[in-house]
Amino acid sequence: MVQGETSEDYSHLSGRYGGIPVSVKKERSENVRIVHGREFPLVLKLEIDEQEVTPSTKRTVLKSFLSEIATQGIFLNLLRNHGAVIFRGVDVKIDDYSDTMRSLFQQINYIPFEQIGLGNPRKAMTDVVMTVNASTYERRLYGHQEFSRYKRSPAVLSFFCQKSSKEGGESTLFHASEYYELIKKVLPEFLEETLSRGLYVSQCWPLKIGPFDPKAPSWSTKHSFGKYIEESDSVEEMKRKAVALCLERACDDYEFLPDNSFKIHHHIKPLRIHPYTKDPFFYSSFPVFYGKYYDARRLGDNYQLNPVNGHGARFDDGKDIPQEVLDKLMELSLEIEYFHKFSDGDIIFLDNYQIYHGRLPFVEGEREVFSSMWDEPPEVKKYPELLNTLV
Ligand SMILES: [Fe+2]
Image (cartoon, rainbow, N blue to C red):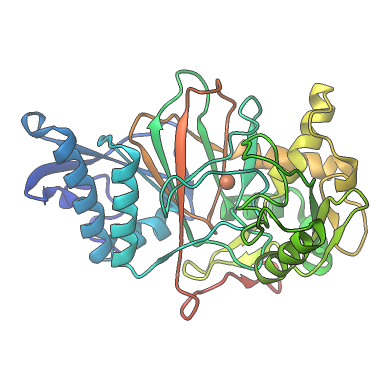
C-alpha cells in the first residue's frame, strides 16, 4: 500500500513535476462510498502555483505527474484500492490527454484496448482516444462494465472531459463488489440461481450502409464488426468478415436474421473474483441491457424497445427471471451510484472489473467527453475468475 494511502493527506504526492511545483489535495465528495473499508472513488486535485499556470505548464504537469506516479507503482495501487480515481484541476486539450495516456500506460506496460463489437458508432479522435456513446444523449445511460460480456475486455478505462455540460451529463459510477454484496443480501435466491444457471442477454444490430452517422448503429460500422469491411464488399462478404471478428473478440453464438440484422447471444457468468483484490463482484452490463425495458414500463414509453432482444435478461438455461427481481436488480444498481459532475479537464480512471459506469442525460452538443481503454498484454493478462460458491 502506498504510504499515507488510507489517510486524508495526499501531500506526499505533491512535488515538482516537469520542474513545476504542484500540490496534490484530496477533494471531499459528498456522495463518496466506502467499499471493503476503502473510499470509492478517490478524487485528487492538482494545483499549479498561480504564477506558473499556462497551457504549456498544464500539459507538462499532467503528463509528468501521471507518468511519475505510474512508474512508482502508485497509480495502479490507488486504482486497485479505490476502484476509481479522479484527477482534476489541470485542464488540457484532447491531444495532450491522448499523449498523457500513451505515456502513463507505457510506464506500466499496458497496451491500448481496441474497441470491437460496440453497440453504437464511435469516432477515433487519435490512435488511443475515442468518442463516447452520445447516440442517446437525451436518455440516461445505465451502468455497465465495458465489454464484460465479450471474450476480451479492458482492465482500465479512462474518461476525459474536454468540455463539461452546463446541465446534466454527470458520470454515474457504482462498485461491482458493493453490488454483489447488496444482491446477496436482498436477492440471495437470485444469486444462487445465477451461480448455477448463468445469465443470458442478446444484442441485435441492423445493417445500414452509408456514411458515418453517430446515431445509426449497424454491425458494419468500424467499431462494431466492420473493421475489415470494404466498400466494394457484397453483403455475404461483409457477413463473413463480421463473423470472423465476432468469433475472435465477442462470442461463439450468433445469427443473421432475414433482414440481415446481426444478433449475438451472450451466455454470461457474472459471479467473479477480482484478479488483484480477490473480492467477489457482479460482472455484467445488466443495467444497460435491462434499462430500456425498465424505462419503457416506468415511463410508459417504448423508446428503443426491440422485441428480438426478449425482455432484456433471463437465466441462461431459458428460465425467466421474475420481473420484480429484474426491477429490484435495477433499483439496487441505482441505490449505490456515485455521481460525478464533470469540470473541464477532469480525468476519471476506472478499474473496469470493479466499477460500472453510466451517465445522466444532457443537452446535445454541450458535452465533450472522450474515452481511452487499456489492458495488460495478453501474455500476462489476469482475467476475473469464476466464483464457484457464494462467499
Ligand atoms: Fe461505456
